[in-house]
Length: 552
Image (tube, rainbow, N blue to C red; front, side, top):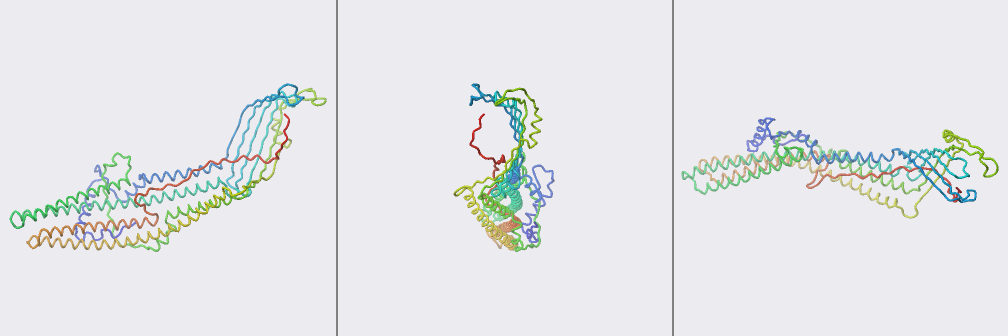
């Protein structure tokens, strides 16, 4: 930003304001950089320190980093999930038929199962690959193997055809988290703009309050000089004692004004300190801040209509609002999809293998054991990858709620939120356009106020000079000189205020084109939503349900 109209031709008018500002610059130039307890600041230095150290900005930066981790959390729904089980079990059941005699049947297992399943990041499908093995021993006389070694591998896939095909809960959550991350980045950039504007405002305010201290000090000195002159006149009988008392009362009043000006400057310094200094630094409260930059004069040129037309592309709060609208539209699309019937294509294939110690029988049922045949676990693995003992399935499942569902209520709510987001964008565009136009008028009006205040200060100085000369030759009174001093003081304060208001309007006009200003008492709003863990389902295929209970 290029500050303009500030302090232009200040030295030409010869008023105390120019002397105050010039003395501020001179003192800043004569103070060495190594002077302990003083930090000489350019505006660029102040802005850089704020971006690096401002605690409020650090909060928003951390919120942006938190949003990035939420994207990673949501992406975890598509990470393959490995699972394994190893165990041992034993089971003794009473005999259930005459072939088993009166002995209980015991079955002891060593078993393991290992698998990987994953939700596909497109199409909503899930796949599962698992391998299991078991070693079983039993005293069942009808068993053909003891021990038996069983192994099997299964591959299954589930694909939604309507509901969850274009968007499901995991993909919707990932999309919202990604967009919220973009929103947090925009909020950080918006906070940077607002913080930089606040720093510039605080910088120029401190500069103006320091100049005001100089003005008040000079005004006090003029009043003290008038006291000395009146005392000399009273001592020689040329003026009544009342004139001396009046001048002394004016000194007391202006000393009070100086005290107030120093307090105001201290407050302004603390506001700038709060924005740019590290609160953990030991010298946080002790270091003295000294602004050394002077606003540059020049002609101000800007196109208000172009600035208003560029609102859509430059305003960061509008970009955040458009992200909120996109989230609302995504919610509508999600709930529209969730209303569809849940129709899924299910398919699976399993290869099995069996080995172990096999009993060889002869004769009628159940036969007499005449020998044993031992087959190793490798035989079971060979069978598992052949079609000798295979199981496959292919089918479709469907489910659909009867009556008003949760998804229909969610769709109604999402529709209201979408309309609300749309109206919010329209409202923000109007507010932004009005703020830019108002900011431009403030720049123009404060520039004109500077010219008027400078003319008033020049006339007040001329009047004081005239009254002072008349007073010295006995043609004026102490009251008139005091009044002229008061008028000059007020004119100088008005000029300082006009200069500060103009500089503030320039800062505001620059910032309001990108972000709305923070109002008094407003805090930085943080956004984000918790991510819910959604593990992938475990497709197993589709099989006919049987009510027949098999005999052990």
